Image (tube, rainbow, N blue to C red; front, side):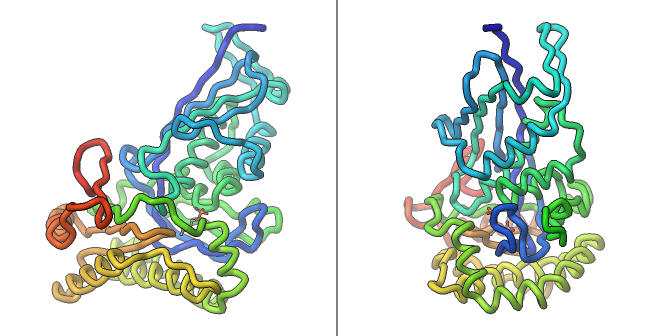
Length: 354
Ligand code: PMV
């Protein structure tokens, strides 16, 4: 066999929804019951780094996640690989003397190595960064000439929230109305420079894997929660417009009110599900009370909170000064004393919060 390998490495940050996606209208294509809006984190903090390689020496597609081989047989991976392969272009590396034609990609196999620099499946949207990075790096390797919104529709088929990680800044995932999902794509609302006073702090309450995956949680909510129906039809459409306006005008008071209310409604939907789903714990609730009290005592909101499918708090401070006060408050009320309460969590340096 010929002895060459062609590789591409990419790094993709995760994103945190401020208007949540919860519930699919089509499980196979991953089409949501409502629009959602998120903010993409800085690329260096919570991110996935993925290297994809192609070589005629490979005899099948293989993938390693955090150093451990995982199966690619699930439909989420298969759908992403199939969609990307079908759009592959011609690739030439003159230095190495490699020429891959469009058609050759069907006969070539891939090796994929992916690393998260944060706990996998602990409600920190690891799948969002993961699938976005997979699709992005494969698109680069195979010279797929599609704009990020088209790529987002492919990443969406890996994990819904992944479609929003193909852009920085504030991003909207429009649910779309077409049956084939071609209009269920992410669009950038504002880039990362638009509102760069904001500081996002993630308080890792627990890095344990969640008990209910978002996939099965959503399915149960769609099947049993009346509140979900009401939320999707009556609440989110208006909230999306209000949030777009708050972001556009950098209106922190509205932003906070909408973000916190939406997080709380998402967790209320989880409680309204049968059997009920509990993602937050006592520490999460204490953080909410603390932030609510602080915002009220200041007269104007200083910090927004939001929680995904896990107990960890995502706190958005209006500026650096507030972020420092917030960190001091968290360290005071939740001293990092044991493994069980606010678990210490290392990202790059030794701070417990990032
Ligand atoms: O894309 P998934 O299956 O990881 O679902 C994500 C769901 C939430 O994180 C709870 C909300 C969201 O919009 O990201």
